[in-house]
Each structure stands twice: as C-alpha cells, then as structure tokens.
Amino acid sequence: MAIKTIVGITPYWYTPDEEKEESNPARFRLVPLNSEQLDQAMEGAKIEGDGLLRLTPNGIRAALAAGISEWENVASDEGALPCIQANHKYLPWVLRMSLASEIVNSAMLREGDLKN
Image 1: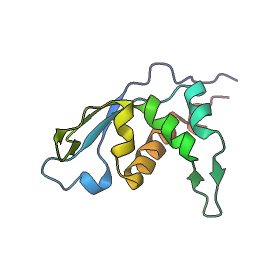
Image 2: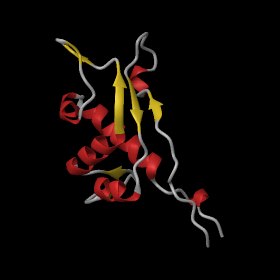
Image 3: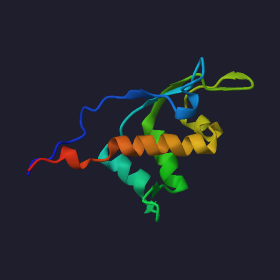
Image 4: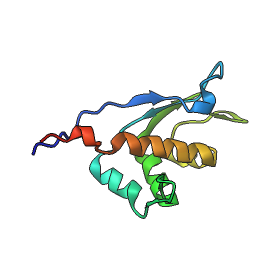
C-alpha cells in the first residue's frame, strides 16, 4: 500500500470565523505540521464523549509554535503585535484553541490520503 506523505503542503491564510465579518479581520498564516510536530501537539490529547479531540495546554502551545508563521491585524493597546512565539500567550484562549485545532486538523492524514 502506498501512503501519500505531507511533504510539500504549503502554508495558507486562515481567518477565524469570528473575524470573517470584520472590515479588517485578523488573519493567520498557518503551516501544516510534519509528523513529529503532530506527535508533540497530540501528546496527551483525548477524544471526548462528543467525539471532539481535546488537546492539552502543552499540545496547544506546540501546535501554535510550529504552525503559525505570521499574522495580520493582531494588535495590543500599544499597536501591532509582532508574530513571535512569545506573543502567542496574548491571543485569547478560545482563539488559541481554534487555531491549534485548525493546525492539527490540516496535518492529520485523512482516510482519502491512503491508497490501496
């Protein structure tokens, strides 16, 4: 059986749902994780009764660190916030979870990617 690898998947711009109606929405350039990065993000994750994947706080941090390459329209009271890992902690908690979920989901090998 041949397996299609994730090598060559390119970064893409992601706009969170809550930003889509804004005139100047925040956008994040996301990089799909490689298999080792996905391992780090998934460590300790659980599938809850509702079927949703729950990442640990360390998993969320790992996904954001490896999966965000740049952002637009993210600011503090002092002005534009540079896209560096140290500033991820200033993103709202719900947004951090949403971004981590998007990053992990984009990296997971889907059933359609397997060939017989």
